[in-house]
Image (tube, rainbow, N blue to C red; front, side):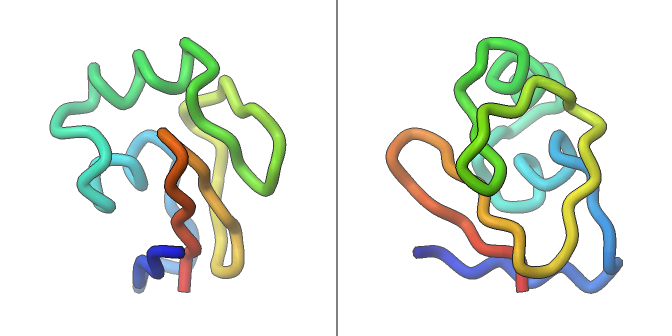
Length: 68
């Protein structure tokens, strides 16, 4: 599992995908989310503005990312 440090406390899902290097642009992040390719804490998430906090686990393309 990849651990990604987020110092802001809360980060939106689309911004996290860019921050973690999963998506290079916001439009790419939006596509992944709307396509149902991203899971948050085991549930498929289609809201790109979903607020994430420390401890959340994001899954994409058979990789897991934990916010620390």
